[in-house]
Length: 258
Image 1 (cartoon, one colour):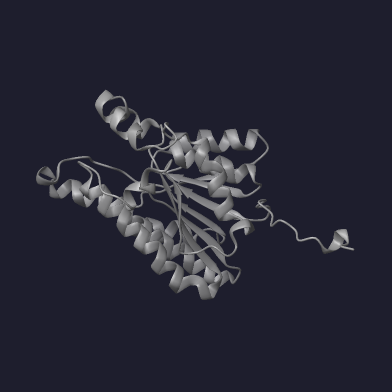
Image 2: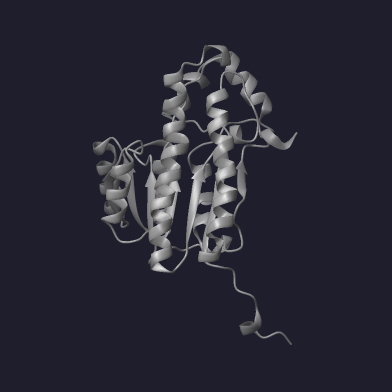
């Protein structure tokens, strides 16, 4: 007879006692990820360049019974990254969500647009991850680093050469970081969503031709909502994904399935 005590136990999705840092947390996907981690009982630091947005969200999280503070941070400023991370207790979870896009045809991409997208989407993510990972190693208790990538890190798309380049690079960074950091108990994974309806995507999703083309690639016949990201980020941050590293979690409505 199998005794109840012999049954396997589902790993917890709760994050009590964990500290999380979420970039680009003032709105959209970043805000939803911060709320999800707080609702899972993590103490969350909201980071962004625009202070009033992260202050308001942190206050709302606290009013709802969670724990949150804020950090004004420009990821293009490497000195600011180092000062911000070294001045706080170690984090157990890092969600690299801050990013940008400047759509343009390949033949029309300007150097300043290329530099701006890569500086935030890749360079800032790289060096913030490095700074946080160093504190994780020093603390000796492992951690989870989650890069918010995109389906565009796995395919190509018209007018998105620079964005695709940055996200393909981010997927490669995910794998290489997982190799380097696994010995320290630090897991590194990416989230690769389809178009999520946010302020960032609203302008081009409002174009009827673009919207119809993009919906045609969605096997579920819809775009994503920020709520679609929330369970996934908690899963990757928690012990429920303890054996997962160097992987991309596709939240692309089947875009890359064929």
